[in-house]
Amino acid sequence: MSQKRLQFTTKLGVIATTVGSAVGLGNIWRFPYEAGEGGGGAFIVVYLLVIALIGIPVICAEFVLGRSSRRNIFGAFRHFSPKGKWHYVGYVGILASIMILSFYSVVAGWTMEYIYQSVSGGLDYGTAASFQGQFDEFSHGNWRPLMWTVAFLLCNLLILRRGVQKGVEKMSNIMMPILFVLLVVFCVNSLMMDKAGEGLQFLFNPDFSKVTPQVVIGAMGQAFFSLSIGLGTMMTYASYFSKKTDLRLSATITAVLDTFVAILAAVIIFPAVFSFGESPAQGPALVFEILPAIFSQLPGSAVWSVLFFVLLFIASLTSTISMSEVSIAFLIDEKKMSREKATWLNTGIAIFFGALCALSFGCLGDVKIFGLTIFGLFDYVTSNILLPVGGFFISLYAGWVLDKRIFNRELADGRRSFFAWLMRFCLRWVAPAAILIIFLSQIGVL
Ligand code: PHE
Image 1: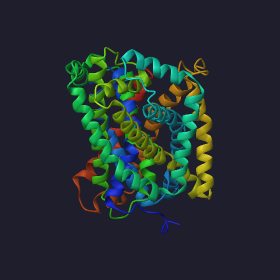
Image 2 (image 1 turned 180 degrees about the vertical axis):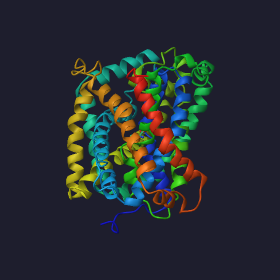
Image 3 (image 1 turned 120 degrees about the vertical axis):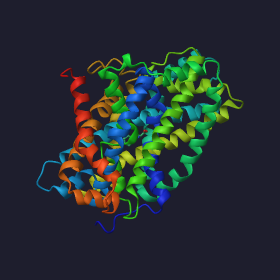
């Protein structure tokens, strides 16, 4: 089986697919709303620290484990430690991937509604208040969000059925560069708004008195979510890399570009938030309410709006494809299922839970678990608990259990390398200790 495994074809393909997985709603929708709720600057400082000290080492660990074993997350641990219990980490990853796919598809469905509204001329570019009303009306009505969630999952299915290589690589190659350009245009536009200074102040002037355990855990969760790590996505993708792929370079480029896009999104959103007199801490609706207001400032609003939401939709697809691949690769490799069946099973489960998440903005809004809606719970549990738990064990495994020679061979062709040493050091000590301390302080033990 291992020889026949599909491989990404080009160097650009590798970068584009890993960046395609990392860049998505996490950067453009979730980062601004988390940063807004976490107090802006303080959140961003913690976020950057987590990316550098935990994020990049964990991407490297996933790359090493995936490429050297040529297996999915469950199979990789089984391969190296057939007798141990490490493959349970695989179950955590698979659970996280299905839960993320479920609530992520709801938000991706919102982008489809916005494409539809911009094309049909239904989107109102009036005032910030009217955008809010529009979004509330749409998300509270049950049928449309439900329909778009299912529609999105079917789009995801269509691409997944064709296999990783053809679908994903092609789309990511074309879409990523256009998205960057568009974001830069919006950024310039936002920087010219009246209260741009206030927005930048909020983002880049950290008030460290705002750093609470809650903010730290939010920043850590966001970093894991945004880099697509802790659940075996990068591991599964690395199992399709060729021996020639430079893992160090791919890991660094992925982390840098992903962070760059998140910061760019925040620089687009916050000047507008302050200029339109909105509150930064509005939660998941933030971006969907502010973006139309931003487009209203540009000539040809509807054109920008369509273009942007189409790109966001594609960015979401390249991310959901990667997370779906976690469970699909598991079902194909370990359960010997056909790709067709595995893909349908993945989609079926996600439609069920996705529907619950979609309706939790409407008729299921009163169903609260630990004070959170179903959507909120899925979002919180995956990013802030499951992914860091996965990342904790992946770090320990790559740092302490995996043969050091395999680690060095994958990361540095077996040569002496400061980078490989540093990554291993972080995986042995820094990442696990940091994750543990953050968890303990969250539950009040520290
Ligand atoms: N990183 C993706 C984003 O930012 C989301 C994602 C999470 C993708 C986990 C795969 C796995 O949108």
